[in-house]
Length: 206
Image (cartoon, rainbow, N blue to C red; front, side, top):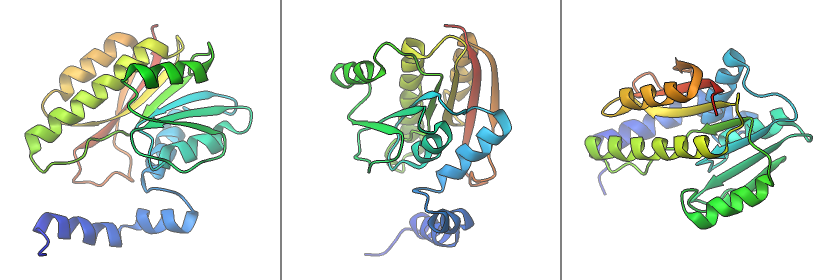
């Protein structure tokens, strides 16, 4: 089977990607781990003892970093439709976090506590049809914001990946209505030609 130009380019980029090589060397699950490390360094998001929720967590690149940083006194509650191997200081629930059954499981795990921080590096399965992929992506990030508004601790923070395009400006405006301060970040570990940026929202108004 002949590979398309774009998939060959992706494969070539992936194999030669310094962050992919570094992740393998550092024992990290994903090159995405470095994005969260960079965001945390810049915006001081994660402290020991925190309770963090990771939406769309598989394969665990962000949960792995967050779990190390919160330490044994803290906890990461991660969820994804896909399975995820266990990690230290991380509780994982497999399923669709927007379904009532999974939402109830998450609430049970929270046990009355509210997360200090909600993080999401979620992305849809790519179809290759740009408009459809952008719509799917915006739908997913809107669902993460719904979750934030239901369970995030007042004064808490939220970090989410957004692909710039149709709907992204409206989403940014929407996030701004619920937080004191919203920054747009493009970590070095994010591929330059990717349209992804990260919104770092601080001070949830509750």
